[in-house]
Length: 92
Image (cartoon, rainbow, N blue to C red; front, top):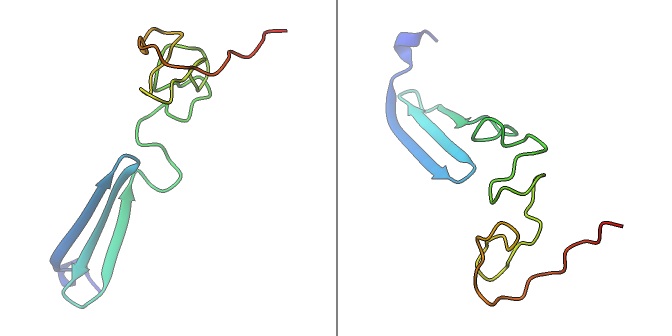
């Protein structure tokens, strides 16, 4: 099949927090689908870095004290409510 035979008659797309999925229905009935970014890769460069923390400035991948009530970090000052946070791990 040549590139001229690949006439797209319909396109579907679905977008989520982890990426975008696309499908093209061709005139011959076949479907081409792809994702951006490809499966297994992160949406934003650096997301898979061991020091990447999307929530706060705490070192590492996770907040030091994550509040389940407001989804903020108590250590970095994002959570200011009188919420109950899990205990910080002892350093020794």
